[in-house]
Length: 346
Ligand code: GDD
Ligand code: MG
Image (cartoon, rainbow, N blue to C red; front, side, top):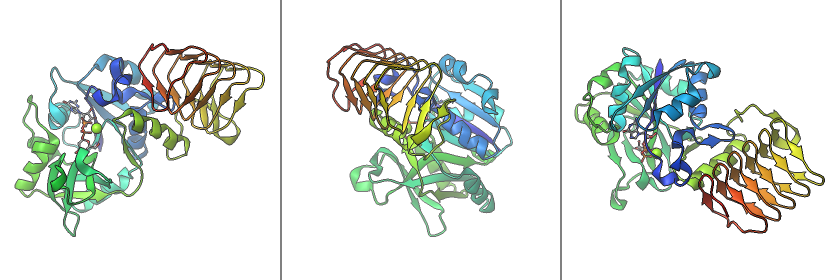
């Protein structure tokens, strides 16, 4: 069993955070987002993973290299123009040829039990099995209808309001047999959701679903990106960053300087080299990247600060996301829900 992760889009809905970094490698609690998928695959015994990349490949290669530091072998399949979701899967075929393959959309965070899903896929002798989840509003996703035996009977990408007849959607995790790759044309833009899945249905190939009732999130927007941090800090996923866990879920890196009267209440993450000045408060669900500076009497709660953010005195940050090297001057206000790109100054 091998795996392909689709690392494609530009992350338009995540702007301005993704102006200078692909969305698949934005930090989540101190490690690049894709680390969570690599870990899930490794836990399921999959050691060979292809990153099928359509955008800024050098940024991603620089971070993941050969994969050996994560205990896996990572191959890179690059495209000269966007091939679409199925086209990108086909483009990675040479690395997985002849093997059953798990495919992950590169922007989802889930604890779906891959081993159980793979077992079901094999037992039912499917050509393709899709991981499925239930959501309140399926219109932003791929709608999936199942029969009583969990065979897929319909797949409708981004349904219109009147087409929503179920809450079950495509979770963006698949298991494919090698035959599925033969249905995808080479070198052209081809969609898994709009072309490949309808093709499987039209030709009556064995095609089923595995419904997962556990955790699932598409990190496509800054709001979801922020709440994913809270979910990790709540223990849905391990904190993968190399940090020391103190009491009460306070995760700290090295060389951190704490001024007199600083209050820290977990769960929080404070990475290497942060400086917290006197009487500042770091409150639950604050995540401070490397070398952040928090000024005297400032408060950070439920917020994510990327590397090198400088915060002056008497600033209250709640529910904000600040990109790398942002600078917030003393006494200024940054409203809840604010998202600032790299190097923004307030
Ligand atoms: N390499 C490559 N090339 N990857 C691509 C391309 C491409 O041309 N287009 C998209 N991708 C990658 C994206 O980076 C992402 O990881 C994944 O494929 C899915 O694309 P999105 O653009 O995020 O699609 P979506 O979120 O609107 O919908 C998809 O995900 C939903 C679940 O989150 C669909 O698969 C839906 O059916 C599904 O419900
Ligand atoms: Mg998506």
